[in-house]
Image (cartoon, one colour):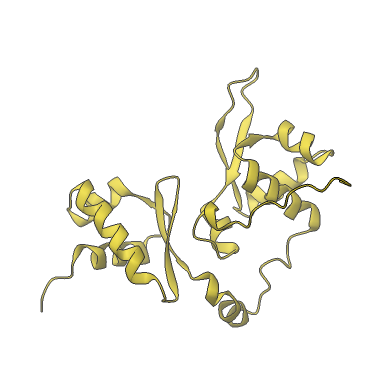
Length: 172
């Protein structure tokens, strides 16, 4: 039996990983150079095009996710509507973090016009957002950004898959 190529070995590692992995960790696991690992990740991404899986990368962390085109099938299998458990205010908060993040609670509240403590706790507990560090402003408040779980939940492979924000109209 012949040994698998590097892209296939990385795919196997990503398949069993319980959390996203950085390129350095993938290189170590496969016993490959960072350059070879980067090329193999590109090869894996190309190989997965047209399949039910995609290679997702967010902030240098990689994970295998289901293809957005398979969302309906997966949803039927799981008998769950991906948005059913999120309220309108939660979705609004999540959109602000996705499009504008990383940002602080006060910045989110300024955009929403209402207190957002409950929404942020809810989204953090569901793993849809994550604390991405501390702001350099006084008090060093937490910065929030979207998580890998967010990408998975909404069938995205990266933030580039988000639809563009519509242009504001003159009436708005």
